[in-house]
Image (cartoon, rainbow, N blue to C red):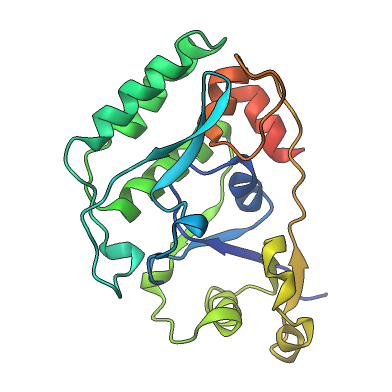
Length: 233
């Protein structure tokens, strides 16, 4: 008998991520939340506490404001500012009140948006797990902070995959530029890439399709069942 294959993926616990994030979870057996890495300081690459939603037919950032972190703060140490959860929820209600699946989705979104934990990582992870559960995507979730990792960058991906018993590391396409397949092979691991290409779906108020928005946008526009189909296609 051959070795049992186990696909491992990981990512920072982002704020109501886009469809591609959930596709990565779907394609993995074990998904590790990178909560023990440094909070990204540049706004261009930071979606740990913000996501894009549709506002009057245009993409708009929805930011979950946090208390000012130290320069070396890890994602697991970030704290959400008081009052921002309810403000963001009210914005969503205003932006999506005329969407086709508003009544079907709004109570579920409210539960996630108003989740009481002030720790950003725990808050985001709760939302991601609950969305997966609602869509019937059952996977093993592990916190990086529970693994006592020591490495960085590519070596961290190898370390995490081995620590959770993986044989295959599923990477996002953005890492193609710096990851080397031979480094994974030396550790007995296979490196594969996600290559997710989102399909277009109807978006209320948009003249043409806008990709890369939070999964919230798909849920309000096409509902739970069709959103799962977009993720798993």
